[in-house]
Image: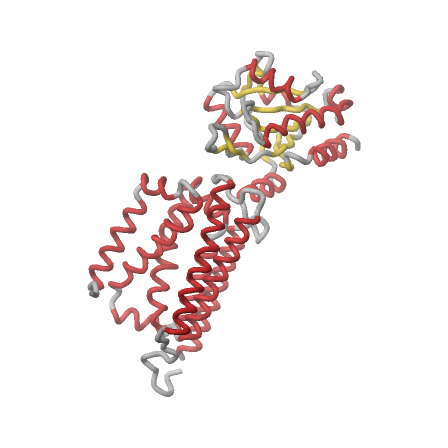
Length: 205
Length: 200
């Protein structure tokens, strides 16, 4: 009897175990937090909170005011000296390629600092200059307060952890927000072609 | 010197509570290496010790469902697979409910279950378990070393690569010990307490 019972118990355990693993990985599709974040955003677009930002020019801007436009958003900190400093170059490249929709106002590039204590308007302006900003359609901004920062990072699923050099390591990406203010996709930060394709495909019917 | 089962269970319970204390939790999840090679194994040890106080009768009842320790091995393997997912290690830091699930499932479903099933396992089942342990150490170690991207959002890349190296070293160490055992150690190929005929 114990053979049959063991077989039965093993089958139940196997079924429960596979079901648990499937649930924990979104059906064996997402084994890391980052993949899970992208999958979740794609399948369940999130409406973003109307967080208040201060731009490199010093004026305040609510995310809600940008409704009606496509937004390409990245999270930065201007002191970054490692590969994340290339995010700026990628956005400058995007600014170049998307020059027309940016000029028409249908698309906005938005770089948000997750280090608002150190990144004031002048640091943000210097960041734009350094990255090669051409002056049209690219906004660099910081959240106006600690709560705004936490809300934004939560909504976008951004995690920044201190590294050993006094900077941060963070899950860099290009987030796509649709005109309804919903986060609809998260793309690789170094794949500005994908972001460009995403925008041109949705803008030209 | 053998420690009485009740004392072992006591030590296990103290260890379990100590690991659950918030400062201890923070310290042991500070790096990926600590979480995977210290915190999770210690949780399993706590469960292993606690279950020593289980009454014999209950153990005998369970053994009817766990011939040669096969069900237990399966349960412990699947439960530990869940906590080897990079996503699960991340979530255990970000979400207190996932942390709670870890603090219950690793001692109970991995440590305690292995403690009960290990004596029931014969040479072959133990061999399968140990071979799988070595293989997992190499697989994960290789993955963590080779991956150019961070697999956990909460941990740094060099931490991940350090863990990869330690896992490879662990795989080599276990293999050496097992090799030594096979060549020069005393191996019980047959189970010490054979069941009588007709009990299958």
